[in-house]
Length: 344
Image 1 (cartoon, helix red, strand yellow):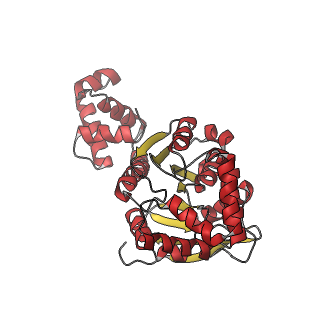
Image 2 (cartoon, rainbow, N blue to C red):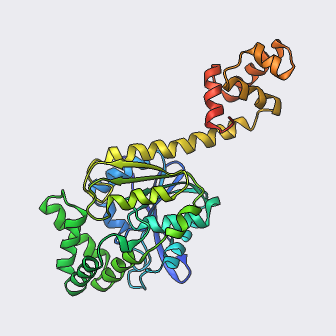
Image 3 (spheres, rainbow, N blue to C red):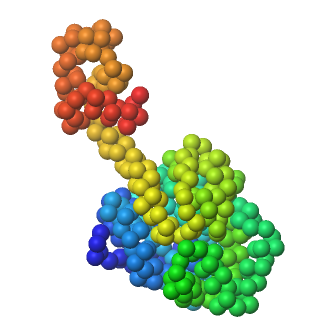
């Protein structure tokens, strides 16, 4: 994706405007919902573009700004309720026009969880990073109130406190840049309301309703969202995979980006391979599917023949036809296809 630029579009979520951008090629991966974001300013950040590039070379990366912030009608009302968050994400998924995978980072994980629970037919796979289920558990009530008061009284000081929290390994220049980014994306009033919404979100009752394959990642020493909250999210989602990561930076495009992106690409790629496998085995007859299952169990042509009551020659011919239709060169590859396609 080197040198490729994003394409920004606009769509409606009720009476609100949502700015969304695409870059890359492949199945759509929707990333968004940050408490403070700006499509254009993010794209001007080298570290962010590197992160996007690692994902966008295999997927069409779809990003959006929450209504009332960034490029999404900044003069309009800010989205702060769970219902409005879900409406904004729904509008972007509808605009993308097909089934998507979701990458919910930080508070964006709450919207992704709610959408996946409500619309499993539209979600291929769900990735949650630095996530939580109940915002009140992020910090003590005293700490939350103190931070909201600082942001509300003096957005300049508040934005620096948040920069220290989100970017603990950053240089002074990088912190200054992030301070400018936050103040460009949100006014002081909207910053308070947006941060308060982060603490107010609660999706605990929706976690056990998620049916789609889910990957949860969290950095062990994340200073913004405690590690235990990400682990709790994974424990509450049926069948979810939890991957602990080393590091202290909350933003996924900082720190060991490759270590974070690698399991994400593998997880999303597994879904892609399963779709391809599922498409390929649709050309097989019922008898060929029976033979393929027995091949995957390690049976020889003679054993398959005895099991199905056919001749060894016929069994051999079926195996040859299966390999041809699947485009594989060996029985082992055919067996691997059966496993990937969920035929076992």
